[in-house]
Image 1: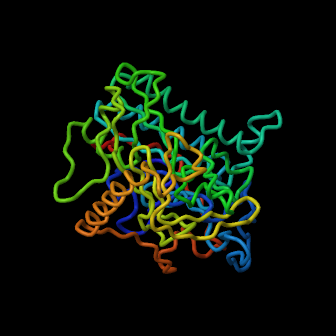
Image 2: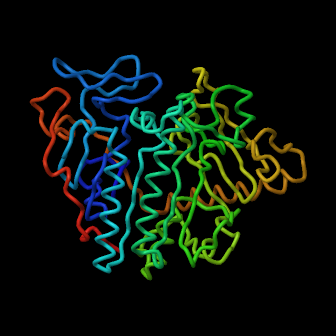
Image 3: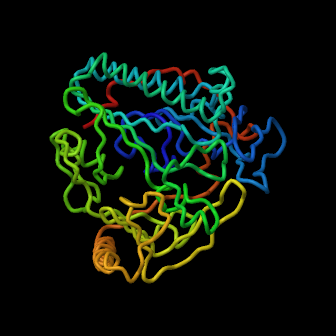
Length: 405
């Protein structure tokens, strides 16, 4: 595994204890620690302190107490990490991994969690692409180059039997303004007209709908767009099926095997998906937005912080707002509650939500460890302000034992 890992570094949540034999990257988002070259952010964060007492900035979400660590397996090899050269190092580690796995003729899974297109955007991205490119455009170009290097290595060594699956995890972070990208046609106009953003941290299409590209020459048809309703939850059962393995018994997986969509041209994916509240409104993590084929129902709405600092009020809806996304992808006007279409869809929405809530209640429950005990702070040298270290092992290449079905 190479790149960003959102479960953190604590005990059993570290990648080396979650099925990955090799790890090189940052154990959380790269804005969750200070660096010596902070990059572009709104509002900007200062560099790591060089001496004296470090503290978190009181008026913004800037981390100054601990420098951002770069891990190689269980060891911190650089702190603070140099973000300016991180994309290049990720590309080098990824291509080395693919080369060695191909030479060993062992099946492999390589997960690359890119920091792009999250803030801070590095200043190297802008200087590497002259001509007045804005930071976001330069970062996008750098990401494209990094993904291209990985694809070229696959084409050179394992083209016939390797699937590449590229996707994102959320829409643009609107409060970051020109550093956030665009929602395109997925504007969430019903919410936008009532205040706040309808992008990241919301369950509007601009927050949850993301692009996905699958590549496997000779297996996946080129230049084809699918309308099948899929989720990142489908990646795991799909690659397990392609490896000829079986999912573990005794638990329920929300994802499905998307092989028929990828290889057979099927337009049938999920009948229903459920979007958890993501910070803008409602109880965090609660399932109060239901996607049912072409329809989407909201039991709670709210706007995240927009570029101008405004937020949208939290509102609960019973009966829910229901949009027909096939006719209204911008989510501008919900169906009239008295319409025949609304009355036909509402019982299906209620039934789907009841089924998933029952499934959750009867299934196993997992939890994440967000402890802030100072004894588990990632620090390679507590005698230095904000923790500082650089070790020779940072240039070591991954070995092919990092392969695992």
